Picture 1 (cartoon, rainbow, N blue to C red):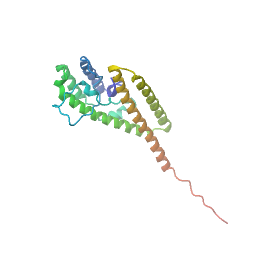
Picture 2: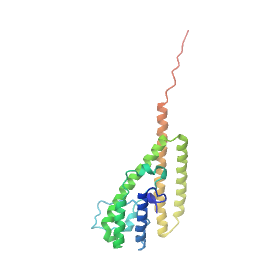
Picture 3: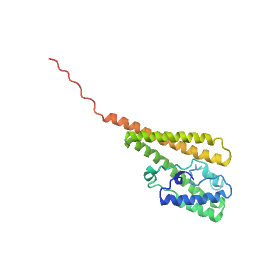
Amino acid sequence: MHGLCGENILSPTCQLIFECEKLVHFLLRRRSMLIVSVCLVCAVDSQQTMEETILVGDDLMTGPPSPVIPPEIASHVLEGVNLCDGLLRNLFLCLQINDIEPFCQDEIALYRQCVEKRDKELRQRLQDSEHKLGLSMPLDQAKERAAQLESEVTTLERRFILASGMDGVEGFRQRWSLHGRLTDTRKRLEALKQGMENRKTDELKQTPPPPARRWFFW
């Protein structure tokens, strides 16, 4: 499992979503479908209608995975965000009852649209939080955080290169997940550095100019 409900369970609500996603994941994989998690973001084509296409589990992997929320800023990032847990529960119940996607088209479409909106908001909040940290953290701590993010970017890049040599579903799953995390981490790093640069600019503006020298002639 990856993303919002991945490695760090942050609240009872997220725990509920995590458990529900595991069950949906199990139901979909029983038919050997290319699906890792329903905690995903998907691009919705407004020109496609329910009559034109049948949505299946693979349609939940047409966009990047949900962003990983660092625990130290999770309370701010997740506050007031619709986590789509109600729609996820409906999707799970539909799959449990019908065991086939064509009978759950409304549930898949509604959940997919909700997740797209949710993850877009979460990504923006992540970048805003990093920018604010760059502005407000002590400079040495901000530099340390930037170094950690740069190290994480390097690690993800290496893992992505290794995953490029993997074939089949597992190789695709790893590349898809790593590419999403790598993109999100780079943007967080950019936002943090931008905040640090803006703070330096503000500090220079606030520094009073040296007093003008007065020359006296006798």
